Image (cartoon, rainbow, N blue to C red):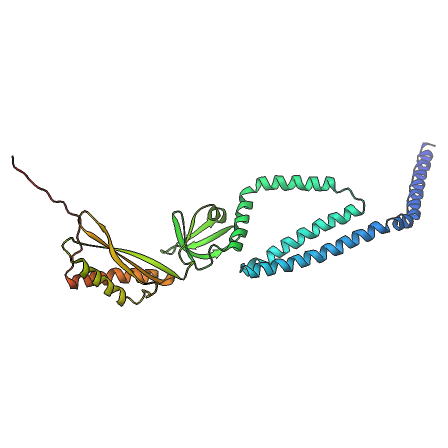
Length: 288
């Protein structure tokens, strides 16, 4: 008898559930019909959102091309913008259908804040990489100096930049470190000035020394004629006269010009009998 009662109760429950499901199916067309305006509104929002996101992606590409942003990041940044915009418009569409997205948005925001705090360093480096890509303080091939680090830029990534030093060492510098410190780009301009200081003894004919230096400048193949070089007395030292020579060269010829001028002036000084003095101390002995 108990088994029969249990079976009967279970059968009744199933019948009730089937009946409720049948009622829901019967009312479904009516509910769908009533929701047609919301469905149409949601569909319009999604269509407009996808169209605007695609348009924004194309506009971003044009802006990056106009500002000479590296092509390797075009697709990445465009995808980020398009996906973000489409997610926002999908949420608007769900809201139009009557879904409560407040709790979802709050949870998403809380998760974003938590992730942001945990990945603060990585986000800072990534943002710095974006800034470098857009502002272009340097390009691959430029020679830069950052605090006590200097070298040729060989790779620029979102998180870091790779430098190659003069003695062929690879240095990985975080992008956040680059954007937060003073940076010198030695090859940003086509031309650079080299400031030479040549010391001669007080007994030297200054006019002759300037003439010799001027002749060395004319003979140096790396020195430019414009802007015009400047040769002038720069200082009166303790044991020598300093003659400054300010010359211009192409940025890529800087070290060639530097080494050539140093050797050329020394050899020409020797031919002209001009001495380059060294530090000396005169001692005077007095008798009482």
